[in-house]
Every structure is written in structure tokens, then in C-alpha cells.
Amino acid sequence: MAKDKQVIRHAARAAMTSERPRKGKVAKGVAAPAPRSAATPGLHLRPLVHVADMAASVTFFEHLGAELVHGGRDTDWVLMQLGTLQLTLVARTPIWSRGDGAVELNFAATMPLDDLERLLRDRRVTVSGVVNHRDFGRQLQVLSPDGLLVRITQREPDC
Image (cartoon, rainbow, N blue to C red; front, side, top):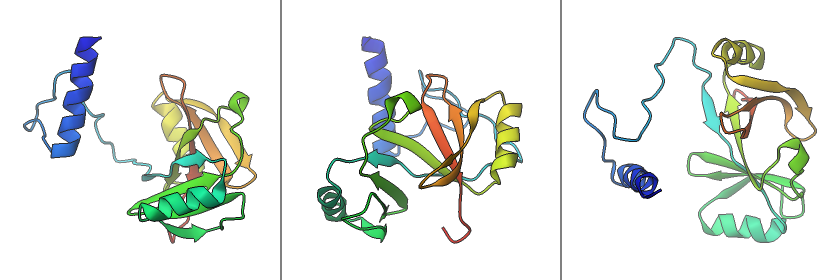
């Protein structure tokens, strides 16, 4: 347990201070990145946060520097821009049986979803299916090795 805490602290310090291992070296306890192939899905992180009070949550993220892009304080969901990140707020209770969480990892892909699904299956990633979400459209759903549900939508060209 103490060793795990050391690894986490080292990784956090490296991320905060831009401390990087020398070329060809991987820090102890940190997995080496997967080799890049010609086919990259072009993923962009778009976290989704379930909130109880949309108006208060929008105000909170505005205080952090976010701008409202879509929706409003009285809507079910909003899209906010915070630096280079787009953040989605949803005023609904998570549906735990569906794999929802209080915060969810959602990505937008530049690669067409059908091509991405084939690519991920070829790479032996567990694809749990493709669904049509009522708010966000068609989504590819994959599971991390720990069972975390990750949703991927098609990125719109102007994003």
C-alpha cells in the first residue's frame, strides 16, 4: 500500500512539474505508453458530470473560467468550454444499472464510429455496444480493464 502511494505521488509530481523520465526510460511503477499505430481515433475528452442544481453548477464552473456553449441554467443539460476542455453538465440522477456514474468519461472521436469499433475490437478492447443516447446521439460504449464504462461519440467537424 505504501508503495502504491509512492507511485501515485511520483506520477502526480511528474504531471505537475513537467518532470519526465529520460527518453526511452519509463518511471518505476508507471506503465509504458502503447505504441502508436497509423490508425488513431483522434479522441477528445468530454467529461460528463451529473448535477443536482444546474443553475448553481453553471455559476460554479463560470467562476472557474468556463463559458456556457449550449443550454442554459434552466435546461436538463449544458455544454461548457473550460480552456481546451468541453464539460457536459446533466441535471439527472445517474442510472447506476446502465453504467452511469457521478462523473463519466466521454470522448468525441474524429474517426467514424464504425471504423473505431472495428479498430478497438481488433485491439481486443471490450466493446459493450453501440447505443443511441437521447441527448448525445449514437455512442460507442467500451469497458476499461477495471469495468469503467467509457462512451465515445462522433465528433462534429466544427468542434
